[in-house]
Image 1 (cartoon, rainbow, N blue to C red):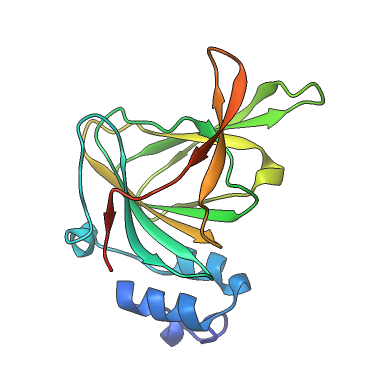
Image 2 (cartoon, helix red, strand yellow):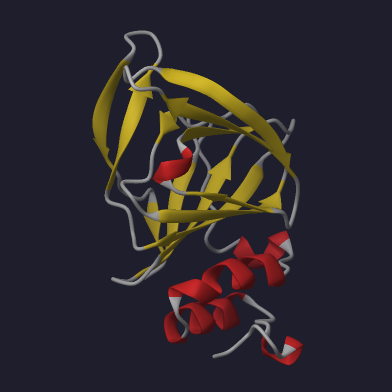
Length: 178
């Protein structure tokens, strides 16, 4: 599906996005994530919440890509992490998120690089050469973000600020749609 030239080819719903991701090439993912607009209500059947931590709710998991809805309560945040070499697009569905990016210096020490704020229908992109990052729901409400990983990530490196060490973390899902 070529969505770059023909606006009528932009997916109109979640099923259309899944079809376009499955049929398209990795180079189309950025355009797709920026072009599609979602109403938060379409994610109700995928949303699962926890008061103690954000939840990873898998919508699609293939060898080619992984699409996850992350549900956040107010104040939830990720640890500082990488993406095991894979590309990641984050589209805000509902809420406001702060992304903080860190770069690793030659001594292996993480240093603050920059911070950005994302609002509904805005997209951020991350790949390991850009550094490590953390996301935080800065809204005073439950919020949702849609994460597209090309290819799926099964583990990541997490930085522990207290001990200044890295650990490998195996990733899983809180819920699966399939």
